[in-house]
Image 1 (cartoon, rainbow, N blue to C red):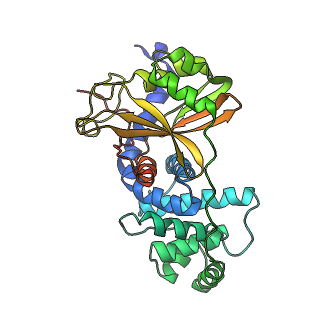
Image 2: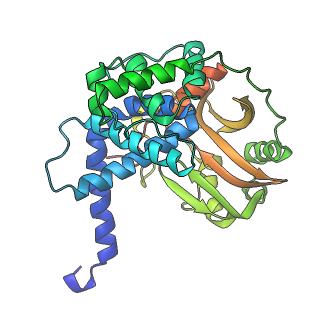
Image 3: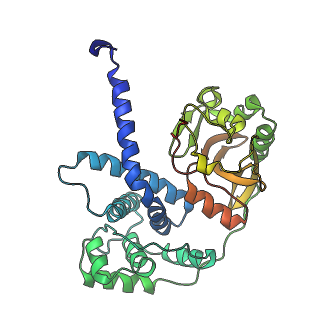
Length: 339
């Protein structure tokens, strides 16, 4: 192809993709840490993953605009970006009282996940704090930073941190009882019936014309026709995809496909944290396991939004552990190609 016939948009797309992949070669290793921090801030696995996705996108763009050297401590930098994004959202929603300077969190040590009971108790308590107080309490009590370290992270003084911790801990009271789960909308049962029958037409008929279907971190599609497209449609891939085979367009790394059998998935409705979600099961040599979870939004008898968390190992692990079901993860990357 000559210079005059090259597609500038295509070349730019290839360049950006290559840069994005190199960015993830470095920063993807920090995603479990980043997810854990976002999880404490948001008190929700879904909101935490949303924040993680936004943090990575913001960090990628910011890194490309830096005039100075890259940040010397990538983990601390991601924490800072996460904190700033979260604080800004809270401020925009007018949920934040003015208590101290805007925080910019720093690095933490690696640690094993806390048991659900203690994590949920702590999460329910700190959810009642202002964003700044919550960040200070999390950095101190969860990540075990010193007052001076927290002060550096939050761009304030150790005295202000100490005061924020005192205020925050003074607000910690016993958690309120959990609410009961509502009944699953009938449209979710219809979704499962159509999915498990491999009836793509009936499945997509459940979508509103204005609906969105998202594979989190990969693609968002608008309307039923895009979702059922035989080449790129996410519904088509969910229904007929075979995890045991290679895909020339890219897919799951071989290490994440170990033991999976050549068979389509099945879906069922489960109640989780007061809402009905979808679990996608796949057959393996040692039994069935969940490999994806999805949240849905409904409008009467139709689906207005479907979000499939296939490439979010942290969310899959947390949700499935809480439900007590076996699971396998698919990694964060979707562009592995054979050969």
